[in-house]
Image 1 (cartoon, each protein chain N blue to C red):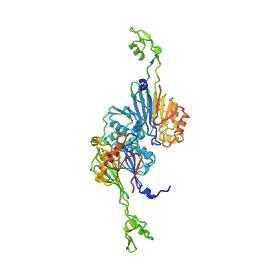
Image 2: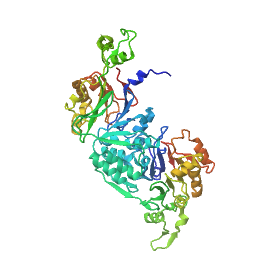
Image 3: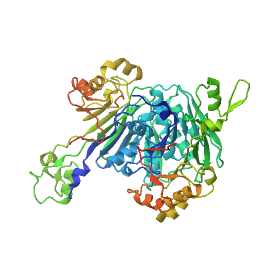
Image 4: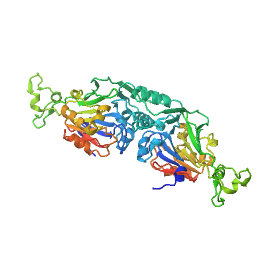
Length: 314
Length: 314
Protein backbone atom coordinates (compact mmCIF):
# COMPACT_ATOMS: atom_id res chain seq x y z
CA UNK A 1 0.00 0.00 0.00
CA UNK A 2 1.30 3.40 -0.91
CA UNK A 3 0.70 6.15 1.63
CA UNK A 4 1.42 9.78 0.86
CA UNK A 5 4.18 10.78 3.28
CA UNK A 6 2.39 14.06 3.99
CA UNK A 7 -0.73 12.27 5.11
CA UNK A 8 1.23 10.53 7.81
CA UNK A 9 3.43 13.49 8.60
CA UNK A 10 0.56 15.83 9.24
CA UNK A 11 -1.59 13.58 11.37
CA UNK A 12 -3.30 15.07 14.43
CA UNK A 13 -5.46 12.56 16.20
CA UNK A 14 -6.64 11.43 19.59
CA UNK A 15 -7.55 7.82 20.45
CA UNK A 16 -9.66 7.23 23.54
CA UNK A 17 -8.38 4.36 25.68
CA UNK A 18 -10.44 5.09 28.78
CA UNK A 19 -13.57 7.16 29.33
CA UNK A 20 -14.73 6.21 32.80
CA UNK A 21 -14.58 8.14 36.03
CA UNK A 22 -12.88 6.80 39.14
CA UNK A 23 -14.87 3.56 39.16
CA UNK A 24 -14.75 1.58 35.90
CA UNK A 25 -18.17 0.41 34.73
CA UNK A 26 -20.04 -1.03 31.74
CA UNK A 27 -16.80 -1.98 30.05
CA UNK A 28 -15.46 1.58 30.31
CA UNK A 29 -11.90 1.97 31.53
CA UNK A 30 -10.15 4.65 33.59
CA UNK A 31 -8.65 7.69 31.86
CA UNK A 32 -6.03 7.29 29.14
CA UNK A 33 -5.62 8.79 25.67
CA UNK A 34 -3.14 8.25 22.91
CA UNK A 35 -2.28 11.39 20.94
CA UNK A 36 -0.42 11.33 17.64
CA UNK A 37 0.67 14.62 16.12
CA UNK A 38 2.87 14.61 13.01
CA UNK A 39 4.54 11.35 14.02
CA UNK A 40 5.06 12.38 17.62
CA UNK A 41 3.44 9.92 20.01
CA UNK A 42 2.08 10.89 23.39
CA UNK A 43 0.02 9.37 26.15
CA UNK A 44 -2.22 11.49 28.37
CA UNK A 45 -3.05 9.81 31.67
CA UNK A 46 -2.53 6.11 32.11
CA UNK A 47 -5.37 4.56 34.08
CA UNK A 48 -5.42 0.91 35.05
CA UNK A 49 -5.35 -1.43 32.04
CA UNK A 50 -4.15 1.26 29.61
CA UNK A 51 -1.59 -1.19 28.24
CA UNK A 52 -4.30 -3.77 27.52
CA UNK A 53 -6.41 -1.10 25.86
CA UNK A 54 -3.49 -0.15 23.62
CA UNK A 55 -3.01 -3.79 22.69
CA UNK A 56 -6.72 -4.10 21.99
CA UNK A 57 -6.80 -1.05 19.74
CA UNK A 58 -3.44 -1.78 18.14
CA UNK A 59 -1.64 1.28 19.44
CA UNK A 60 2.09 0.62 19.32
CA UNK A 61 3.06 1.95 22.72
CA UNK A 62 6.76 1.54 22.12
CA UNK A 63 6.57 4.66 19.98
CA UNK A 64 5.31 6.75 22.88
CA UNK A 65 8.06 9.04 24.06
CA UNK A 66 6.22 11.34 26.47
CA UNK A 67 3.54 10.53 29.03
CA UNK A 68 1.59 13.35 30.65
CA UNK A 69 -0.20 12.53 33.92
CA UNK A 70 -2.76 15.07 35.08
CA UNK A 71 -2.83 14.14 38.76
CA UNK A 72 -2.21 11.38 41.24
CA UNK A 73 -5.66 9.95 41.72
CA UNK A 74 -5.47 6.25 40.94
CA UNK A 75 -7.74 6.29 37.92
CA UNK A 76 -5.25 8.53 36.11
CA UNK A 77 -1.94 6.75 36.71
CA UNK A 78 -2.40 3.18 37.95
CA UNK A 79 -1.67 1.67 34.54
CA UNK A 80 1.74 3.27 34.34
CA UNK A 81 3.66 0.70 36.35
CA UNK A 82 2.37 -2.19 34.22
CA UNK A 83 3.17 -0.29 31.04
CA UNK A 84 6.71 0.42 32.22
CA UNK A 85 7.15 -3.29 33.08
CA UNK A 86 5.87 -4.42 29.71
CA UNK A 87 8.05 -1.93 27.84
CA UNK A 88 11.04 -3.45 29.64
CA UNK A 89 9.99 -7.04 28.98
CA UNK A 90 9.56 -6.14 25.31
CA UNK A 91 13.07 -4.69 25.19
CA UNK A 92 12.38 -0.98 24.89
CA UNK A 93 15.56 1.01 24.46
CA UNK A 94 14.47 4.61 23.87
CA UNK A 95 14.03 7.05 26.74
CA UNK A 96 10.63 7.69 28.27
CA UNK A 97 9.67 11.10 29.61
CA UNK A 98 7.00 11.20 32.29
CA UNK A 99 5.40 14.44 33.43
CA UNK A 100 3.39 14.64 36.63
CA UNK A 101 2.90 16.48 39.85
CA UNK A 102 5.13 15.65 42.77
CA UNK A 103 4.92 12.07 43.99
CA UNK A 104 4.76 9.87 40.94
CA UNK A 105 8.49 9.15 40.90
CA UNK A 106 8.18 8.20 44.56
CA UNK A 107 5.20 5.92 43.84
CA UNK A 108 7.13 4.18 41.08
CA UNK A 109 10.60 3.92 42.56
CA UNK A 110 9.36 2.31 45.77
CA UNK A 111 7.71 -0.35 43.61
CA UNK A 112 10.82 -0.79 41.47
CA UNK A 113 12.77 -1.40 44.66
CA UNK A 114 10.41 -4.00 46.11
CA UNK A 115 10.17 -5.80 42.75
CA UNK A 116 13.95 -5.67 42.38
CA UNK A 117 13.17 -4.28 38.94
CA UNK A 118 14.96 -1.46 37.21
CA UNK A 119 14.19 -0.49 33.64
CA UNK A 120 17.27 -0.53 31.43
CA UNK A 121 15.85 2.26 29.29
CA UNK A 122 15.99 5.77 30.69
CA UNK A 123 12.98 7.19 32.48
CA UNK A 124 13.03 10.96 32.93
CA UNK A 125 10.63 12.37 35.50
CA UNK A 126 9.51 15.94 34.96
CA UNK A 127 7.70 17.64 37.81
CA UNK A 128 4.77 19.89 36.94
CA UNK A 129 4.21 23.19 38.70
CA UNK A 130 0.79 23.34 40.35
CA UNK A 131 -1.53 26.28 39.75
CA UNK A 132 0.20 27.80 36.72
CA UNK A 133 0.46 27.26 32.99
CA UNK A 134 3.93 26.41 31.75
CA UNK A 135 5.41 25.11 28.51
CA UNK A 136 6.60 21.59 29.23
CA UNK A 137 7.36 20.35 25.71
CA UNK A 138 8.53 21.98 22.52
CA UNK A 139 9.87 20.71 19.24
CA UNK A 140 9.95 21.92 15.64
CA UNK A 141 6.25 21.61 15.08
CA UNK A 142 4.38 21.80 18.37
CA UNK A 143 4.29 22.85 21.99
CA UNK A 144 2.59 21.39 25.05
CA UNK A 145 1.52 23.69 27.88
CA UNK A 146 -0.08 22.77 31.18
CA UNK A 147 -3.52 24.05 32.11
CA UNK A 148 -4.11 24.72 35.82
CA UNK A 149 -7.26 22.81 36.80
CA UNK A 150 -9.29 22.90 39.99
CA UNK A 151 -9.29 19.62 41.88
CA UNK A 152 -8.83 18.09 45.32
CA UNK A 153 -5.10 17.60 44.67
CA UNK A 154 -2.66 19.32 42.31
CA UNK A 155 -4.02 18.74 38.80
CA UNK A 156 -3.03 20.03 35.37
CA UNK A 157 -4.59 19.65 31.97
CA UNK A 158 -2.54 19.80 28.80
CA UNK A 159 -2.90 21.76 25.59
CA UNK A 160 -1.14 20.70 22.41
CA UNK A 161 -0.68 23.41 19.79
CA UNK A 162 0.98 23.16 16.43
CA UNK A 163 3.37 26.02 15.77
CA UNK A 164 2.62 28.49 12.97
CA UNK A 165 3.25 26.76 9.67
CA UNK A 166 5.15 28.12 6.64
CA UNK A 167 3.36 29.57 3.63
CA UNK A 168 2.91 26.96 0.88
CA UNK A 169 4.31 27.26 -2.64
CA UNK A 170 1.49 27.82 -5.13
CA UNK A 171 2.32 25.44 -7.95
CA UNK A 172 -0.23 27.12 -10.21
CA UNK A 173 1.76 30.36 -10.42
CA UNK A 174 5.27 29.04 -9.86
CA UNK A 175 7.57 30.18 -12.70
CA UNK A 176 9.57 27.40 -14.35
CA UNK A 177 13.34 27.22 -14.12
CA UNK A 178 13.78 28.55 -10.60
CA UNK A 179 17.10 27.47 -9.09
CA UNK A 180 17.17 25.13 -6.12
CA UNK A 181 18.33 27.98 -3.90
CA UNK A 182 15.45 30.15 -5.04
CA UNK A 183 12.94 27.41 -4.22
CA UNK A 184 14.52 26.92 -0.81
CA UNK A 185 14.23 30.65 -0.12
CA UNK A 186 10.63 30.62 -1.17
CA UNK A 187 9.82 27.75 1.20
CA UNK A 188 11.59 29.62 3.99
CA UNK A 189 9.31 32.63 3.43
CA UNK A 190 11.84 34.75 1.52
CA UNK A 191 11.43 36.57 -1.77
CA UNK A 192 13.03 35.13 -4.92
CA UNK A 193 16.12 37.16 -5.80
CA UNK A 194 18.68 37.03 -8.59
CA UNK A 195 22.42 36.70 -8.17
CA UNK A 196 22.75 40.40 -7.45
CA UNK A 197 20.05 40.27 -4.76
CA UNK A 198 17.39 41.99 -6.83
CA UNK A 199 13.83 40.81 -6.06
CA UNK A 200 12.41 38.84 -8.98
CA UNK A 201 9.23 37.67 -7.25
CA UNK A 202 7.73 38.60 -3.92
CA UNK A 203 7.14 35.58 -1.66
CA UNK A 204 3.46 36.38 -1.18
CA UNK A 205 2.85 36.31 -4.93
CA UNK A 206 4.11 32.75 -5.32
CA UNK A 207 2.75 31.24 -2.09
CA UNK A 208 -0.53 30.45 -0.38
CA UNK A 209 -1.31 31.25 3.26
CA UNK A 210 -0.05 28.68 5.78
CA UNK A 211 -2.28 25.86 6.81
CA UNK A 212 -4.17 26.15 10.07
CA UNK A 213 -2.20 25.32 13.22
CA UNK A 214 -4.26 22.77 15.06
CA UNK A 215 -4.73 22.40 18.80
CA UNK A 216 -6.13 19.99 21.38
CA UNK A 217 -6.83 20.55 25.07
CA UNK A 218 -7.34 17.86 27.72
CA UNK A 219 -9.08 19.10 30.86
CA UNK A 220 -9.76 16.41 33.46
CA UNK A 221 -10.33 16.27 36.38
CA UNK A 222 -11.64 19.70 37.19
CA UNK A 223 -14.37 21.56 38.99
CA UNK A 224 -16.36 24.10 37.00
CA UNK A 225 -14.47 27.38 36.69
CA UNK A 226 -13.58 29.96 34.08
CA UNK A 227 -10.09 30.35 35.46
CA UNK A 228 -8.41 28.16 32.86
CA UNK A 229 -10.32 29.43 29.83
CA UNK A 230 -7.45 31.73 28.74
CA UNK A 231 -5.12 28.74 28.36
CA UNK A 232 -7.36 26.70 26.08
CA UNK A 233 -8.79 29.47 23.95
CA UNK A 234 -9.83 28.62 20.37
CA UNK A 235 -8.71 25.00 20.48
CA UNK A 236 -9.94 22.79 17.68
CA UNK A 237 -10.87 20.03 20.07
CA UNK A 238 -11.49 20.19 23.80
CA UNK A 239 -11.75 17.07 25.92
CA UNK A 240 -13.46 18.13 29.11
CA UNK A 241 -14.56 15.87 31.90
CA UNK A 242 -18.31 15.45 32.35
CA UNK A 243 -18.50 13.16 35.34
CA UNK A 244 -22.12 14.04 36.13
CA UNK A 245 -25.32 15.45 34.70
CA UNK A 246 -26.84 18.70 35.94
CA UNK A 247 -29.21 16.92 38.32
CA UNK A 248 -26.09 15.95 40.28
CA UNK A 249 -24.64 19.45 40.15
CA UNK A 250 -24.24 19.73 43.92
CA UNK A 251 -22.31 16.44 43.90
CA UNK A 252 -20.17 17.83 41.08
CA UNK A 253 -19.41 21.01 43.04
CA UNK A 254 -18.61 19.07 46.18
CA UNK A 255 -16.24 16.63 44.49
CA UNK A 256 -14.72 19.20 42.10
CA UNK A 257 -15.98 17.64 38.92
CA UNK A 258 -17.99 19.01 35.98
CA UNK A 259 -21.45 18.25 34.71
CA UNK A 260 -22.02 17.79 30.99
CA UNK A 261 -23.54 21.28 30.95
CA UNK A 262 -20.45 22.68 32.68
CA UNK A 263 -18.22 21.11 30.03
CA UNK A 264 -20.32 22.64 27.29
CA UNK A 265 -20.16 26.04 28.99
CA UNK A 266 -16.38 25.82 29.15
CA UNK A 267 -16.17 24.84 25.47
CA UNK A 268 -18.40 27.77 24.51
CA UNK A 269 -16.56 30.31 26.65
CA UNK A 270 -13.21 29.13 25.30
CA UNK A 271 -14.34 29.31 21.67
CA UNK A 272 -13.49 25.66 21.10
CA UNK A 273 -14.57 24.18 17.79
CA UNK A 274 -15.53 20.74 19.08
CA UNK A 275 -16.05 19.21 22.50
CA UNK A 276 -15.44 15.65 23.63
CA UNK A 277 -17.08 14.54 26.88
CA UNK A 278 -15.48 11.92 29.10
CA UNK A 279 -14.68 10.69 32.65
CA UNK A 280 -18.21 9.39 33.02
CA UNK A 281 -19.54 8.37 36.41
CA UNK A 282 -20.34 4.68 36.94
CA UNK A 283 -23.93 5.74 37.67
CA UNK A 284 -24.57 6.30 33.94
CA UNK A 285 -24.99 3.26 31.77
CA UNK A 286 -26.58 5.18 28.91
CA UNK A 287 -24.54 8.28 28.05
CA UNK A 288 -26.90 9.84 25.50
CA UNK A 289 -28.56 12.06 28.12
CA UNK A 290 -25.15 13.59 28.93
CA UNK A 291 -24.55 14.19 25.25
CA UNK A 292 -27.93 15.87 24.89
CA UNK A 293 -27.37 18.03 27.95
CA UNK A 294 -24.10 19.32 26.53
CA UNK A 295 -25.43 19.77 22.99
CA UNK A 296 -28.19 22.00 24.29
CA UNK A 297 -25.42 24.47 25.17
CA UNK A 298 -22.72 23.53 22.68
CA UNK A 299 -23.94 21.60 19.62
CA UNK A 300 -20.53 20.45 18.41
CA UNK A 301 -20.23 17.90 21.20
CA UNK A 302 -19.41 14.21 21.02
CA UNK A 303 -19.02 11.43 23.58
CA UNK A 304 -15.50 10.07 24.03
CA UNK A 305 -15.87 6.44 22.98
CA UNK A 306 -13.17 3.91 23.77
CA UNK A 307 -11.33 2.68 20.72
CA UNK A 308 -12.47 5.63 18.61
CA UNK A 309 -9.97 7.98 17.04
CA UNK A 310 -10.88 11.65 16.73
CA UNK A 311 -9.02 13.37 13.90
CA UNK A 312 -8.39 17.10 13.68
CA UNK A 313 -8.15 17.90 9.96
CA UNK A 314 -5.87 20.63 8.68
CA UNK B 1 -35.67 -18.84 43.81
CA UNK B 2 -35.13 -21.31 46.59
CA UNK B 3 -31.57 -22.48 47.06
CA UNK B 4 -30.69 -25.29 49.40
CA UNK B 5 -28.55 -23.70 52.12
CA UNK B 6 -26.18 -26.65 52.05
CA UNK B 7 -25.46 -26.18 48.38
CA UNK B 8 -24.20 -22.69 49.05
CA UNK B 9 -22.60 -23.55 52.33
CA UNK B 10 -20.44 -26.27 50.93
CA UNK B 11 -19.18 -24.56 47.82
CA UNK B 12 -15.52 -24.92 46.91
CA UNK B 13 -14.69 -23.19 43.67
CA UNK B 14 -12.03 -21.22 41.88
CA UNK B 15 -12.76 -18.56 39.26
CA UNK B 16 -9.94 -17.56 36.94
CA UNK B 17 -9.65 -13.78 36.50
CA UNK B 18 -6.23 -13.72 34.90
CA UNK B 19 -4.16 -16.41 33.18
CA UNK B 20 -1.34 -14.52 31.48
CA UNK B 21 2.30 -14.25 32.38
CA UNK B 22 4.03 -10.94 32.99
CA UNK B 23 2.96 -9.46 29.66
CA UNK B 24 -0.79 -9.58 28.97
CA UNK B 25 -1.62 -10.87 25.50
CA UNK B 26 -4.50 -12.15 23.35
CA UNK B 27 -7.07 -10.82 25.78
CA UNK B 28 -5.48 -12.68 28.69
CA UNK B 29 -4.97 -10.74 31.90
CA UNK B 30 -2.32 -10.89 34.62
CA UNK B 31 -2.72 -13.28 37.55
CA UNK B 32 -5.80 -13.15 39.77
CA UNK B 33 -8.20 -15.79 41.10
CA UNK B 34 -11.34 -15.63 43.13
CA UNK B 35 -11.78 -18.52 45.55
CA UNK B 36 -15.03 -19.27 47.34
CA UNK B 37 -15.07 -21.94 50.01
CA UNK B 38 -18.20 -22.45 52.11
CA UNK B 39 -19.19 -18.78 51.86
CA UNK B 40 -15.69 -17.53 52.60
CA UNK B 41 -14.42 -15.25 49.82
CA UNK B 42 -10.77 -14.92 48.92
CA UNK B 43 -8.65 -13.38 46.22
CA UNK B 44 -5.32 -14.86 45.20
CA UNK B 45 -3.06 -12.37 43.45
CA UNK B 46 -4.48 -9.18 42.03
CA UNK B 47 -2.92 -8.36 38.68
CA UNK B 48 -3.74 -5.20 36.75
CA UNK B 49 -7.43 -4.96 35.83
CA UNK B 50 -8.53 -7.61 38.35
CA UNK B 51 -11.38 -5.31 39.44
CA UNK B 52 -12.64 -5.02 35.86
CA UNK B 53 -12.40 -8.78 35.46
CA UNK B 54 -14.49 -9.25 38.59
CA UNK B 55 -17.09 -6.83 37.24
CA UNK B 56 -17.07 -8.65 33.94
CA UNK B 57 -17.60 -12.03 35.51
CA UNK B 58 -20.00 -10.76 38.16
CA UNK B 59 -17.85 -11.53 41.15
CA UNK B 60 -19.02 -9.40 44.08
CA UNK B 61 -15.65 -8.23 45.35
CA UNK B 62 -17.11 -6.54 48.41
CA UNK B 63 -17.50 -9.99 49.92
CA UNK B 64 -13.77 -10.66 49.67
CA UNK B 65 -12.26 -10.49 53.13
CA UNK B 66 -8.75 -11.83 52.54
CA UNK B 67 -6.36 -11.20 49.66
CA UNK B 68 -3.26 -13.34 49.28
CA UNK B 69 -0.45 -11.93 47.13
CA UNK B 70 2.25 -14.41 46.11
CA UNK B 71 5.03 -11.91 45.36
CA UNK B 72 5.78 -8.36 44.37
CA UNK B 73 6.23 -8.66 40.64
CA UNK B 74 3.81 -6.24 39.03
CA UNK B 75 1.68 -8.81 37.25
CA UNK B 76 0.65 -10.22 40.63
CA UNK B 77 -0.32 -7.11 42.58
CA UNK B 78 -0.80 -4.05 40.33
CA UNK B 79 -4.59 -4.30 40.39
CA UNK B 80 -4.72 -4.03 44.16
CA UNK B 81 -4.56 -0.24 44.41
CA UNK B 82 -7.47 0.23 42.00
CA UNK B 83 -9.50 -2.39 43.82
CA UNK B 84 -8.88 -0.70 47.18
CA UNK B 85 -9.94 2.67 45.65
CA UNK B 86 -13.11 1.23 44.18
CA UNK B 87 -14.02 -0.54 47.43
CA UNK B 88 -13.78 2.83 49.15
CA UNK B 89 -15.79 4.67 46.49
CA UNK B 90 -18.45 1.99 46.78
CA UNK B 91 -18.60 2.46 50.56
CA UNK B 92 -17.02 -0.73 51.82
CA UNK B 93 -17.11 -0.94 55.59
CA UNK B 94 -15.77 -4.38 56.48
CA UNK B 95 -12.08 -4.95 57.13
CA UNK B 96 -9.76 -6.21 54.42
CA UNK B 97 -6.85 -8.50 55.20
CA UNK B 98 -3.94 -8.47 52.79
CA UNK B 99 -1.13 -11.00 52.95
CA UNK B 100 2.13 -10.47 51.10
CA UNK B 101 5.86 -10.46 51.41
CA UNK B 102 7.56 -7.38 52.76
CA UNK B 103 7.01 -4.23 50.72
CA UNK B 104 3.40 -4.20 49.66
CA UNK B 105 2.27 -1.98 52.53
CA UNK B 106 5.08 0.39 51.58
CA UNK B 107 3.99 0.35 47.90
CA UNK B 108 0.41 1.15 48.86
CA UNK B 109 0.88 3.66 51.65
CA UNK B 110 3.18 5.88 49.58
CA UNK B 111 0.42 6.00 46.96
CA UNK B 112 -2.28 6.69 49.57
CA UNK B 113 -0.18 9.62 50.76
CA UNK B 114 0.34 11.18 47.33
CA UNK B 115 -3.33 10.71 46.42
CA UNK B 116 -4.38 12.13 49.79
CA UNK B 117 -6.53 9.06 50.02
CA UNK B 118 -7.10 6.96 53.09
CA UNK B 119 -9.59 4.10 53.10
CA UNK B 120 -12.15 4.45 55.88
CA UNK B 121 -12.43 0.67 56.16
CA UNK B 122 -9.64 -1.13 57.95
CA UNK B 123 -6.83 -2.69 55.96
CA UNK B 124 -4.72 -5.20 57.85
CA UNK B 125 -1.37 -6.06 56.31
CA UNK B 126 0.05 -9.47 57.16
CA UNK B 127 3.65 -10.14 56.26
CA UNK B 128 4.53 -13.57 54.90
CA UNK B 129 7.68 -15.37 55.95
CA UNK B 130 9.87 -16.24 52.97
CA UNK B 131 11.18 -19.75 52.48
CA UNK B 132 8.91 -21.58 54.91
CA UNK B 133 5.37 -22.92 55.10
CA UNK B 134 3.21 -21.33 57.77
CA UNK B 135 -0.49 -21.30 58.59
CA UNK B 136 -1.74 -17.81 57.81
CA UNK B 137 -5.49 -18.30 58.06
CA UNK B 138 -7.74 -20.56 60.07
CA UNK B 139 -11.44 -20.62 60.80
CA UNK B 140 -14.00 -23.28 61.70
CA UNK B 141 -13.87 -25.02 58.37
CA UNK B 142 -10.56 -24.38 56.65
CA UNK B 143 -6.94 -23.39 56.88
CA UNK B 144 -4.61 -21.59 54.49
CA UNK B 145 -0.90 -22.36 54.54
CA UNK B 146 1.86 -20.78 52.50
CA UNK B 147 3.97 -22.84 50.10
CA UNK B 148 7.59 -21.74 49.72
CA UNK B 149 8.20 -21.32 45.98
CA UNK B 150 11.42 -20.73 44.07
CA UNK B 151 11.55 -17.36 42.31
CA UNK B 152 13.72 -14.29 41.75
CA UNK B 153 12.18 -12.55 44.76
CA UNK B 154 10.42 -13.88 47.86
CA UNK B 155 7.40 -15.82 46.63
CA UNK B 156 4.83 -18.03 48.33
CA UNK B 157 2.04 -20.15 47.00
CA UNK B 158 -1.06 -20.92 49.05
CA UNK B 159 -2.85 -24.12 49.92
CA UNK B 160 -6.45 -24.11 51.09
CA UNK B 161 -7.57 -27.19 53.00
CA UNK B 162 -10.93 -27.92 54.52
CA UNK B 163 -10.65 -29.24 58.03
CA UNK B 164 -11.77 -32.80 58.81
CA UNK B 165 -15.55 -32.86 58.69
CA UNK B 166 -17.91 -34.49 61.22
CA UNK B 167 -19.50 -37.85 60.59
CA UNK B 168 -23.00 -37.48 59.13
CA UNK B 169 -26.17 -38.76 60.77
CA UNK B 170 -27.55 -41.69 58.79
CA UNK B 171 -31.26 -40.92 58.56
CA UNK B 172 -31.97 -44.44 57.36
CA UNK B 173 -31.02 -45.99 60.69
CA UNK B 174 -31.78 -43.13 63.06
CA UNK B 175 -34.14 -44.26 65.84
CA UNK B 176 -37.22 -42.08 66.33
CA UNK B 177 -37.77 -40.05 69.48
CA UNK B 178 -34.17 -39.12 70.23
CA UNK B 179 -33.97 -36.05 72.46
CA UNK B 180 -32.46 -32.82 71.10
CA UNK B 181 -29.43 -33.28 73.33
CA UNK B 182 -28.92 -36.80 72.03
CA UNK B 183 -29.02 -35.58 68.44
CA UNK B 184 -26.57 -32.80 69.27
CA UNK B 185 -24.21 -35.34 70.83
CA UNK B 186 -24.49 -37.52 67.77
CA UNK B 187 -23.59 -34.63 65.44
CA UNK B 188 -20.63 -33.83 67.67
CA UNK B 189 -19.33 -37.38 67.24
CA UNK B 190 -20.46 -38.69 70.63
CA UNK B 191 -22.40 -41.82 71.45
CA UNK B 192 -26.08 -41.55 72.39
CA UNK B 193 -26.47 -42.02 76.14
CA UNK B 194 -29.40 -42.09 78.49
CA UNK B 195 -29.86 -39.86 81.53
CA UNK B 196 -27.58 -42.08 83.57
CA UNK B 197 -24.84 -41.94 80.98
CA UNK B 198 -25.33 -45.46 79.66
CA UNK B 199 -24.58 -45.90 75.98
CA UNK B 200 -27.78 -46.54 74.00
CA UNK B 201 -26.23 -46.31 70.51
CA UNK B 202 -22.67 -46.08 69.42
CA UNK B 203 -21.98 -43.07 67.25
CA UNK B 204 -20.53 -45.08 64.40
CA UNK B 205 -23.69 -47.20 64.17
CA UNK B 206 -25.91 -44.17 63.52
CA UNK B 207 -23.56 -42.12 61.33
CA UNK B 208 -21.82 -42.26 57.97
CA UNK B 209 -18.17 -41.42 57.39
CA UNK B 210 -17.39 -37.70 57.05
CA UNK B 211 -17.36 -36.14 53.63
CA UNK B 212 -14.03 -35.65 51.95
CA UNK B 213 -12.08 -32.55 53.05
CA UNK B 214 -11.23 -30.69 49.87
CA UNK B 215 -8.08 -28.81 49.05
CA UNK B 216 -6.66 -26.39 46.48
CA UNK B 217 -3.07 -25.29 45.94
CA UNK B 218 -1.92 -22.22 43.98
CA UNK B 219 1.72 -22.37 42.91
CA UNK B 220 2.90 -19.42 40.84
CA UNK B 221 5.44 -18.11 40.10
CA UNK B 222 7.99 -20.84 40.61
CA UNK B 223 10.95 -22.56 39.08
CA UNK B 224 10.83 -26.34 38.73
CA UNK B 225 11.67 -28.03 42.02
CA UNK B 226 10.43 -30.83 44.24
CA UNK B 227 11.09 -28.81 47.37
CA UNK B 228 7.49 -27.72 47.89
CA UNK B 229 5.82 -31.06 47.07
CA UNK B 230 5.37 -31.98 50.77
CA UNK B 231 3.18 -28.90 51.30
CA UNK B 232 0.73 -29.56 48.49
CA UNK B 233 0.46 -33.32 48.77
CA UNK B 234 -2.82 -34.95 47.66
CA UNK B 235 -4.62 -31.71 46.81
CA UNK B 236 -7.81 -32.05 44.82
CA UNK B 237 -6.81 -29.26 42.48
CA UNK B 238 -3.38 -27.81 41.82
CA UNK B 239 -2.92 -24.57 39.89
CA UNK B 240 0.67 -24.55 38.75
CA UNK B 241 2.26 -22.02 36.50
CA UNK B 242 3.23 -23.20 33.02
CA UNK B 243 4.81 -20.12 31.53
CA UNK B 244 6.63 -22.02 28.81
CA UNK B 245 6.72 -25.27 26.82
CA UNK B 246 9.56 -27.72 27.06
CA UNK B 247 11.28 -26.32 23.97
CA UNK B 248 11.90 -23.20 26.07
CA UNK B 249 13.12 -25.19 29.07
CA UNK B 250 16.41 -23.33 29.34
CA UNK B 251 14.51 -20.04 29.36
CA UNK B 252 12.26 -21.46 32.09
CA UNK B 253 15.26 -22.49 34.20
CA UNK B 254 16.94 -19.14 33.73
CA UNK B 255 13.87 -17.08 34.68
CA UNK B 256 12.66 -19.47 37.42
CA UNK B 257 9.44 -20.47 35.74
CA UNK B 258 7.94 -23.86 34.85
CA UNK B 259 7.20 -25.54 31.57
CA UNK B 260 3.88 -27.30 31.07
CA UNK B 261 5.76 -30.58 31.50
CA UNK B 262 7.27 -29.33 34.77
CA UNK B 263 3.80 -28.47 36.06
CA UNK B 264 2.55 -31.93 35.19
CA UNK B 265 5.56 -33.49 36.90
CA UNK B 266 4.82 -31.53 40.06
CA UNK B 267 1.15 -32.55 39.98
CA UNK B 268 2.12 -36.20 39.56
CA UNK B 269 4.76 -36.15 42.29
CA UNK B 270 2.36 -34.41 44.68
CA UNK B 271 -0.45 -36.87 44.02
CA UNK B 272 -2.81 -34.10 42.96
CA UNK B 273 -6.14 -35.17 41.50
CA UNK B 274 -6.38 -32.43 38.87
CA UNK B 275 -4.01 -29.83 37.45
CA UNK B 276 -4.80 -26.37 36.13
CA UNK B 277 -2.17 -24.70 33.97
CA UNK B 278 -1.78 -20.91 33.90
CA UNK B 279 0.56 -17.88 33.78
CA UNK B 280 1.02 -18.36 30.05
CA UNK B 281 3.76 -16.52 28.18
CA UNK B 282 2.68 -13.92 25.64
CA UNK B 283 4.52 -15.99 23.00
CA UNK B 284 1.69 -18.56 22.96
CA UNK B 285 -1.50 -17.61 21.22
CA UNK B 286 -2.76 -21.16 20.98
CA UNK B 287 -2.51 -22.93 24.34
CA UNK B 288 -3.50 -26.41 23.23
CA UNK B 289 0.11 -27.53 22.74
CA UNK B 290 0.83 -26.65 26.41
CA UNK B 291 -2.21 -28.68 27.45
CA UNK B 292 -1.06 -31.64 25.37
CA UNK B 293 2.47 -31.43 26.75
CA UNK B 294 1.16 -31.60 30.31
CA UNK B 295 -1.42 -34.32 29.60
CA UNK B 296 1.30 -36.58 28.25
CA UNK B 297 2.61 -36.68 31.82
CA UNK B 298 -0.54 -35.98 33.83
CA UNK B 299 -3.80 -36.65 32.00
CA UNK B 300 -6.08 -34.83 34.44
CA UNK B 301 -4.90 -31.42 33.27
CA UNK B 302 -6.91 -28.42 32.14
CA UNK B 303 -6.05 -24.93 30.95
CA UNK B 304 -7.00 -22.09 33.28
CA UNK B 305 -9.51 -20.11 31.22
CA UNK B 306 -10.54 -16.62 32.25
CA UNK B 307 -14.13 -16.38 33.40
CA UNK B 308 -14.34 -20.12 34.02
CA UNK B 309 -15.14 -21.48 37.45
CA UNK B 310 -13.55 -24.76 38.51
CA UNK B 311 -15.58 -26.57 41.13
CA UNK B 312 -14.20 -29.12 43.55
CA UNK B 313 -17.09 -31.45 44.37
CA UNK B 314 -17.46 -33.05 47.78
